[in-house]
Image 1 (cartoon, one colour):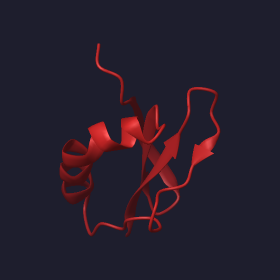
Image 2 (cartoon, rainbow, N blue to C red):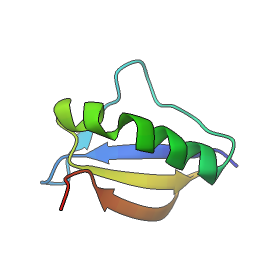
Image 3 (tube, rainbow, N blue to C red):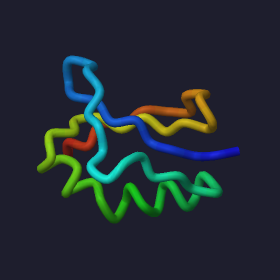
Length: 66
């Protein structure tokens, strides 16, 4: 299993991650990473992050506070 994030704008279009897609060995690693980087992602134009287990969508979350 490979855990990754897909990044989207509010209109649903995908935002490519600079430097390619990060891969994580587990869900906790992926969640720790997003916890450390979400503010930079928001500045880079990402509104929403979708956690994927291989290609299966686990959940989506807004990067906007509130």
